[in-house]
Every structure is written in C-alpha cells, then in structure tokens.
Image (tube, rainbow, N blue to C red; front, side):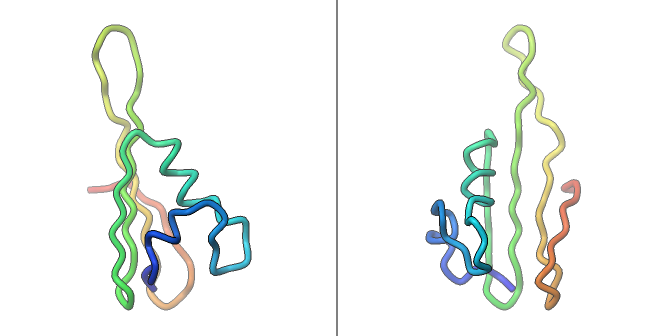
Length: 82
C-alpha cells in the first residue's frame, strides 16, 4: 500500500512488479493535469484531467477519475472523483 519512492515510480521503466513500468509515466504524459499523493501504509490517489478540445477557446474537463489502491489486496480501482 502506497508508493515508497514516488519520484522513481514516475520514471519510465521502473516497476516493482516486474512489468514494463510505463503506467504512471504514460498517464502523466497523456493527461493535461496529473496529481499523485501516496502515503506508505495508507495508499495512493492519482487524479488526472483530460481537457476536451473543441471550437473556440472553450475548454471543458471530462470528469476527473481517481485511482485508488484497495487496501491489502494489491489491486486497484478506478472511479469518478466526487
């Protein structure tokens, strides 16, 4: 639960699970806004915003989504922020 070395976790290729290590860095590149808070022993919250581009200067945000670690399970859920 939680990410012990957040700076390292945001680098391409870093993984504690033996996978590719492109998830968090990839999301950060794709989104217009990216915020992450992690507390070892408690969990991690990632909030991202992708702006909808349209005609004129208007920008509307799609609903932010949050990633939550499910305590003690090693799994995560993704749901709309409230």
